Image 1 (cartoon, one colour):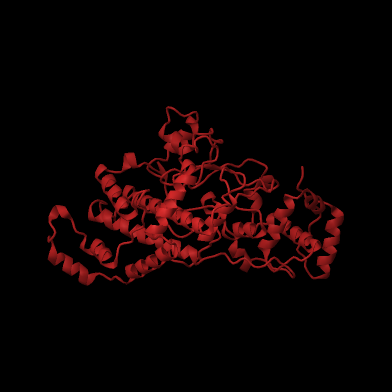
Image 2 (tube, one colour):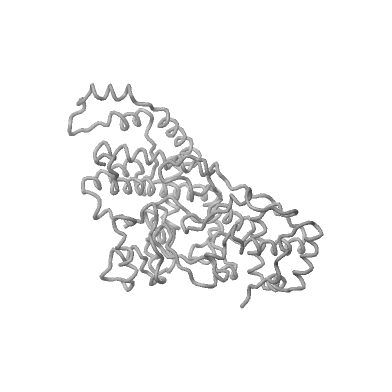
Length: 451
């Protein structure tokens, strides 16, 4: 079972039992201790939940397996094979069907070729080819990365990158499932006007994002750090992870369309399924290229002294609780109250307890800034890039997001949190800001954080 493109409806009733991810419970409903969660998910079968064992015809499944093997190889011989332009034209227009003979419908094919307008497809294919090179997906790199992956990663992330390795079942938080091509902790934010191709570029990392995760691990999870890997080994391993993500997303996007066709869609089998697969492969590579060019612009921190940082944190407190940002809507009582949500993998997540200061994507200022700017797409956390150009602005506050970052950092520091809640400190800061013409704190009489 996989979650569809739009995610699950409703909210989870509770945390799942360790070792029983909700989608696995839905498939093995007679064996799971979480029958209530499984039944909630099964009600969405055919709508938000796709089950290839039920919704995919055997002939489609066999053809898709063949297409995947041809394009992506095996763990021992991995590849990402982008078809050349002549192959694209053949699959898109000629669409040979061996069951009807190689030279069937030649007149119709000639007419189709004359009418076809290849400019858009050609542009996407060229962008995909450029992304293939930038992502270092050559056979030699992937072969080396595959060895490292099987040595260091397969135990938890599994052979296909599904997050279902043998050691994963014992963990409450499942390892990352790469197969939808989305990640939580990225420093990319595609521009709003970017045309959407396939599943889109949101949630895709840059190579540097994946490198940082491998170097530093993920705080608060079972993902370890690998500081001893050389730069070359990091490059190889990152390429192989990207290979698994591209393979998985191409399969996922093809399945999603083949199992949920619209009235205007053809029957996705034979030549039609082959073209759907090739088109999704082109779009997936295209979107990784878009993400690579869409790094979040993180300006330098503008505070130079502890007093300036405290002023910024006071501003951040007001913005955090404002209608413009609405952070308290999900992080109720600063994340100390349980508000469970479904993520796009069908897992259960809880908005971060901000008072603890444990951030899986990193606790540095630039890490928190990136989360605020671009959001955490698979978890449903929105990005706030648009607030930099909208809403009220005040003197000496050049960037709202840094104000909130400084407030978040103060939340996790008992000394800074105490200063924020001291009325005398607030009065001193208000006097300084008032002298500068900044009236953001004018109506603030008390900061309340601790119970």
